[in-house]
Length: 122
Image (cartoon, rainbow, N blue to C red):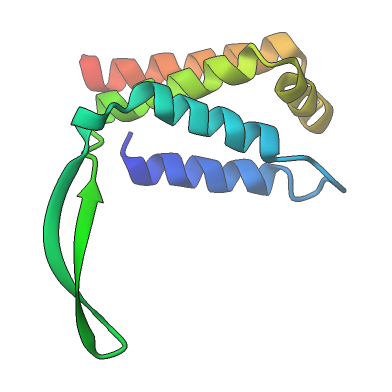
């Protein structure tokens, strides 16, 4: 799974809630940010000086990036899913919106992570 796959899953996650009158997404955003913070360390980031054009002017900037391979991306997603599974508010929202049981939602998340690991590890 590439970083663009995570972005697509997040977009699909939001589409999933599109038919719901109101859902507080903040809990999911907070859990995802926590997952990123727990997964990425300062040493993971690369920094380089570069120049970009803004309104026709060359501006010197520092470009910061972090390489995300399939293993790392899957690990981040796994941490995110575990945080959701351990958060009563988040799980209640998923149960209410999906109509599935908590157990089915957890099984689905775990199955997805297992499939991703198997795809890239053998």
